[in-house]
Image (cartoon, rainbow, N blue to C red; front, side, top):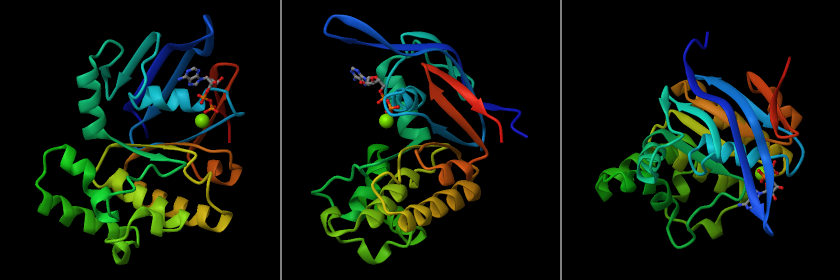
Length: 229
Ligand SMILES: Nc1ncnc2c1ncn2[C@@H]1O[C@H](COP(=O)(O)OP(=O)(O)O)[C@@H](O)[C@H]1O
Ligand SMILES: [Mg+2]
């Protein structure tokens, strides 16, 4: 079914230097994700889940190993090349929403399109369509501070998806939400994922959410281990 790898890592390692000492976080990770696949990343706090997701999302670079993103080697890519891939291909969703407080909801959602050079009027049109899709059109003129957590995450999802990325990376997207809101947010994310056949990686502590993904992997002891259903 997933004959094409979207992400393919071999022997990927990352250490952080702290107080002059090198602390390995992930070591010799092999990890493949197919196009359109959904995968949950679970594991204890501090295990390296965010580090792995940041490397996948080209926000961080590995110290060693091979990483193919859509078949292209990015291990030695320059920062501006990585930024260009992020801008065109990846949507990010974070636990704390990361909306820009001084911008309205619709301006937040339009931002990725503005970064791509789209003019303001068109970017706002696209943003409004996405806000409709996530049920937030009525709040287009609000500031993030005037929204509930669940509403903020709907807006963040609209922002992540407005540019039609081929990959969505969500780092504990429901970690700040109550159970009811969390499942609504997940339902929304998965329905758009299916519609667009986007590849989705989600870091979560919630077993119920992890089970909604086609695959579950655990980050433990610096490596990625596949969980069998
Ligand atoms: N920028 C950084 N500088 C130094 N250490 C870091 C940095 N980012 C993460 N770490 C360390 O790497 C380990 C894994 O962190 P992280 O990937 O955030 O784990 P998780 O998301 O699974 O909770 C932790 O011990 C953390 O302290
Ligand atoms: Mg984390």
